[in-house]
Image 1 (cartoon, helix red, strand yellow):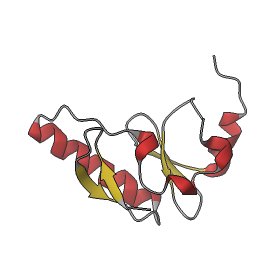
Image 2 (cartoon, helix red, strand yellow):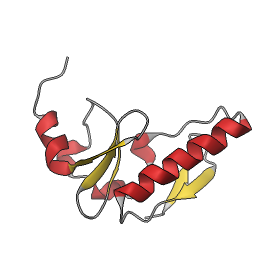
Image 3 (cartoon, one colour):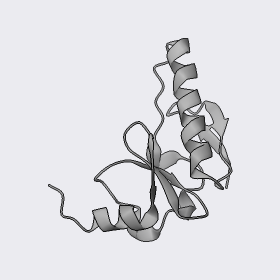
Length: 100
């Protein structure tokens, strides 16, 4: 699997090796700043981040909030703005709540 972080238009904007959730969160913040400076209309899509295979199968259709990626240690970058890190157990417990 590639480490490339791409926009919806296919532009490579950064990289993440899947090892540390904090690195993904930082990289996404840097990419957003760069895109803002450029005035880019491109978007980052949470479900298209590298190392999606590290996300447990039962969370692939999770819809309560964005999951940007989970690292090898089970920590996930979550939220619309990819601004929180939560352990997979917390995400899983939230996924058990029925959301309307």
